[in-house]
Image 1 (cartoon, rainbow, N blue to C red):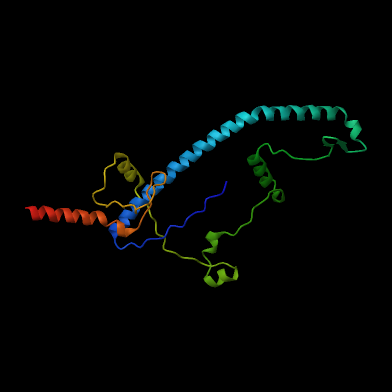
Image 2: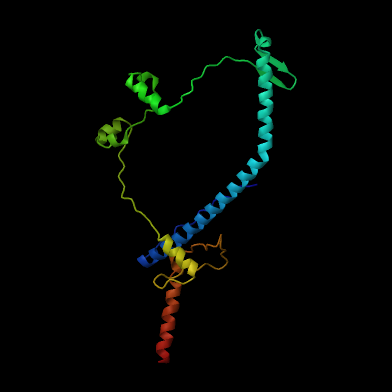
Length: 219
């Protein structure tokens, strides 16, 4: 199955806070749509996993049983592996290898005792630069260390998801924020219409102004 290519949506230019507010509403709608898709994905993955586990259970059980039988037989015939440590059969290979391993019963207690006994060589430590300490250095010192200071004024965009979700559920149009119209021929995806830019957001305002003008003429 061919993988769908991600189509890059052009970034529209906004000319006022009203259009920014409309874009925030649209952003909230898209976020709600993504969350619904993620929930659906989780449900599908859970169903597939449950079906796989059910189908694989008898196969895994038989594999474990056969491996146990082979190990039991080989343990009883270790004398045949004294000279030749590998036995070649028509359907596979059986090998005997001496191995040594250590099972750590409690990692916390083990580390505590090793530190108390001064056995630091027996503790593996992951080495990585301390960014908090690097912040205290000058730009020249950072350059010597192949580092650089990056200062940005971050902008946080937070649409009011709960309010937008309630508004969408009640199907009541917002009064302060004009709805974003869909372009002719555009299709909804997962119940979410595509954002068509700020120029379409002003259309409902023009219609409202025209309606008020007609009422004044009638009076």
